[in-house]
Image: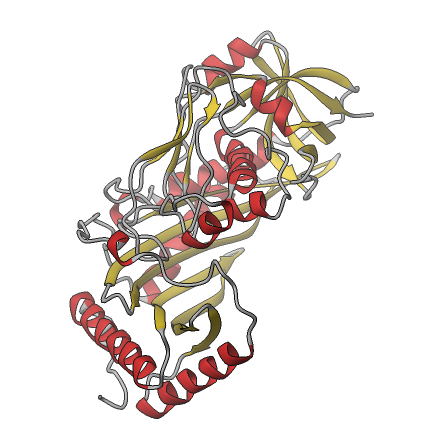
Length: 451
């Protein structure tokens, strides 16, 4: 074995090959030391991030990170270690340490690798790698352009910062079944945070973009202006009287409601009996027009992947169809705990998509008539065991389908189970900046608490 791998970051194929080779060496060392099975996960990334504020450069950061996670099994006893050192001696010591942990661990009848016959056999190219050779000076100029465009909108605006980041990385997973899979990916982002001030006080808002391809990022000036416009629109915010009204969650905020669902139907929450949907499998939990399905092979999408963290091939599948909860979200381990097969979701879901039955945000506002548009959520007031939901919110009061004024110091409350069943519409304004692909949600009958 080579004592240390070189890191050809500018050659993704060579990097993947060398990381795969090192994973194979770790698997061989584990077998040599007597492990009955082994799995290795590697992540390596490099990137540049810059930040500016009020025309000054605040940060210029380079990152170069690498980590190996090694899990060994002695029968059904498990030991895990992590290391960033890839030398032969470091790997030998890491394997020894993991074996020592396994010898002292309790037996777990559900521990172990996924079945060999379930390993992914085809790894399609999902168009995830688009590096951006941006230098620090250019990155700073782009961030300054973004900030300046926002500040030029109105003298009441100040900058709380604009940031640009470009990252590229490689992921490798291998196990002693002989499976070794790898993928390379990029992630580029631009964001701006603005503060608007008038005689009533200060209001803060932001905007951001995330893309695999740098050319798909919006023009910096356009993004900065949007951040500034959002902050200005919040001026004059006031509380509202307590009422029971429809609530329209803007698409980026609706993604949080989807995250609460995935947490509730994740195998770990189910076998630990810590989900408000424990009795819901096979039952309607949404209106019958709702389908929530996973699309892991979308070219260029941020959540796309060909294999999960157990080495299983990912696949298109529906967790909710016609409003009915059809499946838990399962890894190999959580599936064994529940006596069910894995859904190839070790590590989470991949591009979870929600069906739409309505138009854009303007059409949703018209559909709502009178109620609250939520553009910001605060706090962590979600109980995953009971489904009780109570969070601070900001946004706009709506009457006759038109924005009337910004609101602040508002609490919205309900129960997630009721909120899912009372989902009236999902818009076509699809949020794509993450792993949850959904439009805005119009939910009937929530309690909005104000003054």
